[in-house]
Image (tube, rainbow, N blue to C red; front, side):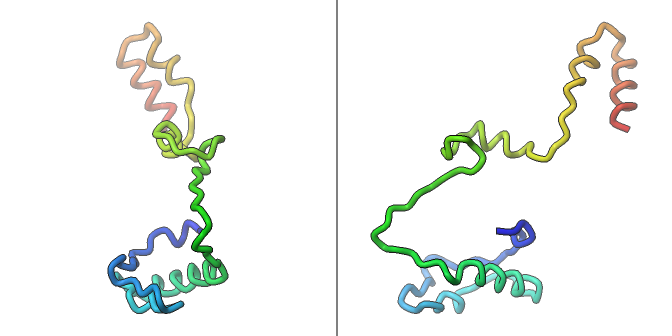
Length: 112
C-alpha cells in the first residue's frame, strides 16, 4: 500500500461489518470523511477490489523486515531506523581523551 494512504483515519467497526453483502461494509465507514480521505479510500478500494479470499485457505503471516519472514522485536526495532543516517564516527568523538567541552563542540560542528 502506498505510504500516502497511511494517514487515513477511516475504520470499519468489527461489530458493524456486513459479511452478507459484497460491498455492504462501505456503509459502516466511520471517521473523518474529508475529500482527500475519500479519494485515498477509493484508491485502496481499487487495489483490493479484485482480491478473492478463499474460506478454506490457511492464513500466512510474513514479516518483510526479516530474512526469515518471522516477526521479532529485534527486527521491529531495526525498522525504526530504516532511512536514518548512520554516523559511526561518534565513538571516535565521545571516547577520545579530549575535554568534554571540546567533544561537544566537535559534535555540534559535525551535526551543523
